[in-house]
Every structure is written in C-alpha cells, then in structure tokens.
Length: 342
Image 1 (cartoon, one colour):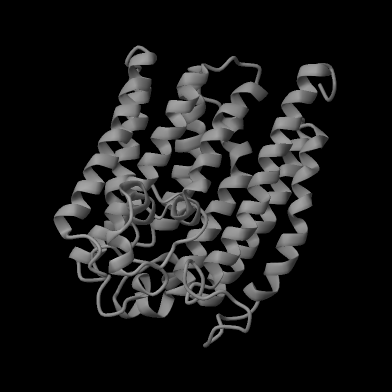
Image 2 (spheres, one colour):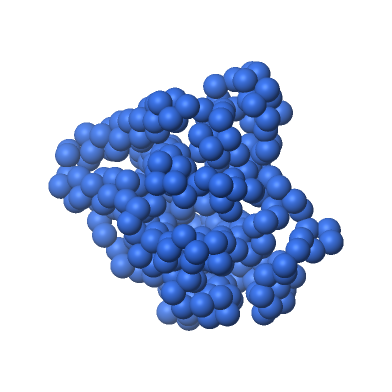
C-alpha cells in the first residue's frame, strides 16, 4: 500500500509515468483515476446536509449520514471516471487536448485500457448505487428518495454529454451540489424538504460552481475550437471572469442576509475569515489568463495550464471550511443558548 501516494492523490492530481503507475496499488490507481483531490467539495456538501439537520433541531442517524457521504463521494468519482472515458471515446481528450496537460488521463496516457477504465466506472457506480439502495431501504423505499436517486444518475451519466457542451454544465453543478446533494441529503436524513436549507446552501455551492467556471475559462479557446459550448464559451471570457467574481462575493452577501433573517446566528460571520484568501486571488480574475505560466505559479499536478480553476478551488476550500466551522459553532450556540437570536 502506497500511503504516500494516497495522501498525494487526495491533495493534487499527480503526474505519474506508466512505470510508476504499474507499481501502484489498486487504491492509489482509483484515487488518481477518480481525481480524488476534488472530491473534498462533495465531502463538504454531504457534511453540510447533516449539519443543517442538526441546525434545524433534528436528530440524525449517524450511519445514514456516513452512508450518504460515502454514496455522494462515490457518485462524484463515478462521474469523473465516466467524464474521462466519454471524452476519450468522442475523440476530445486526444491530440494533447487540455485535459491531458494538467493530469493523467488514464486511457489517453495508456495507464488503463478502455475495458479497464469501464470496469473502474462500473464498480464505483455500483457501490454508489448500493449506498443509495441502503438509504432507500432505511427510509421505507420513499418515492421522493427514488426521484433524488434517479436525478443523481441522470447528472452522473449525462453531465459530460450533452449538458457540458450545451452550456448547461455550470447550471448542473449548481443544482447537484445544492438542491440535490445538500437539500436532497437533508431530506434523506430528516424526511422533509426545506427551501431555507437550499437557500442556506448557496453560499458554499456558489463557490463550487466557480471552480467549474474557472476550468471552463482556462480551456475556453480549445473548447471553442472543438465546438464544446460551455457557458464561458457562450458568454465570453471577460463576462465569465466577472461572473466568477460575482458568485464569490454573493456567497458573503447571502451569509449576511441569512443572519439578518435569523436563520443563522451572527457566529456565521466566521466565513469572513476567508476574505484574505479572496483578496489574494480576485486581482487575477480582473485580467485575462496569461499566455505563459506566471513566475511562482505551480505547474502540473492541478496547476498550469489550469489557472483560474485552482485559484477558485483554493478560494472555495477556504470559504467552505470556515462555512462548515461557522455552522458547527451556530449549532453549538443554539444548543447551549437556545433563546439566543430567536
């Protein structure tokens, strides 16, 4: 077991040669193939689903919460694996396409055969589906949860094609990480739909959406040439950059609004501890992507030629962690001082 590679694959998208790949254990290969470094965004969504349940005064079945978290992470991993397979089969991830520049594309780089890649997809997807069936059984085969499971499968299978190429990929991310993961996860755990939870999830979910926006800005010219009409391709590079900044700022505005309507207590102002990280990266979004790698900017392993995506990812991680800690503090405050901010 290569624990060093496990740790590396959970923090960056590591570059590996065929020789190094052949020496790795199965878990290391799966972590690299599934692009595990980005699964932290889904982990936080699943955690937030349970925290919102506690916030609203519900008890939570801890086993259900763990299975929900595992299932969502496996579903995201399934999509990442299928994304690479689909784009390779369609001829997109070939001829030094952008995807093959910032990390190993298992089939394009000869690390896996198409059959092996499909096996990774099938096993990961079946495990995710098994988690869904467990939660269904735990909830008496609730038809709403069947619907949520079905919607999840649709997004896993059809995000790469045709959604991403019809300027629907960014909207799909907003829907999946918010209403579906957090709102749907909340429903699975407590048995009720709560629109305030959907609203309260948006500060974090907007950050997740900036990451996919950033990646699509990074490869805008290449996507345009290949007729992949992501939203940045449709609205233009400058409008896309300013849309990302607007979403980042809106996250803070929404937290203030949720405090003002007393859904959150003032302790949620902890998220403003992430402002210094935002101030570090926002000037880059005011200008087009540089033609060459800026001095000091990381290369490979999730770095250059990605530029806006890693900046957005770091910003979202900083905000998301403080949002989660703020929510935990909010729950504890309500637990020990139940009449505060009522």
